[in-house]
Image 1: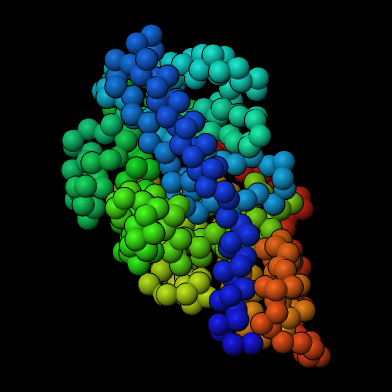
Image 2 (image 1 turned 180 degrees about the vertical axis):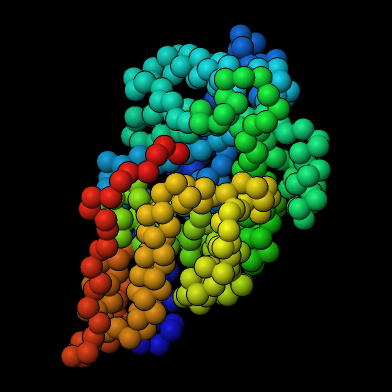
Length: 384
């Protein structure tokens, strides 16, 4: 099969994984609703000028629909507060933040209880589109910390977005201290967008010419649909299918997104992009900790759980090897083989028209679908 045929198939797969534009608007509305609530005059946090920033795959434009229809979509935001780390303990801030979100849930008739995670609070929405939203309270980092990040080679524009986050597992969680965990989710999002936007320019201009947006600056990242974003969607879906029986042991999306963004070299079509990314992404895993650092806060390790649970690193390597093999053999398949591979590894049913450009019959040497690999009785990792 020629490469053009494979490109068409992979584009069709990603098209089937995309979500409606209305879901992005719904997500935006929920972030804005929380921002309005936290800034209302009665809010106990209003004095700290809370600023809500969307994060995660909905911001990056890399969402994939769940395998199971009843599954929830995952929303993330960061709530940055203008206060000193020594004004409150991490525990006090997180509990105060939780009180406001509990009041928000009651006021909006949300029946599911607020769920506490080690670093954030989770709200469950149960309407025609099921979402859960992880909201992370944090404090703008001190100038000295920002300067330290800059000294590690990060630009001021990215470093200034660093924050101090609450974490129940931190030794200073219950005491007043300047020593909090450093994170930079807002910086990472800006870094991702900066590296992605350059490859989106032709589409951005086309959308403006079609009068869908007034200017290229108005086009949200989920509309960019670059080969990088679509490759990340493919990789996440392959991961989801491979680990559908043990999702808690699967490689996390932030590791895949981080490594893929580093590894992307500007390939113009999805096949060259995703195979190139997979061939290079392991080069950006450090041999020592931090193994997969946040490029905008190098002390933050997206693979921090690998240290405590080596099975998670093993599973990443297992998945990486499998997806590399599965992508490499796509061009050797005929129509029936391609249909089986796509169903087996991406849980996508292609139409006859989408497969019509691939020839049959199946040769005797056609590759078989590799089995789903999972660890049936492995220890479960701890909370996010």
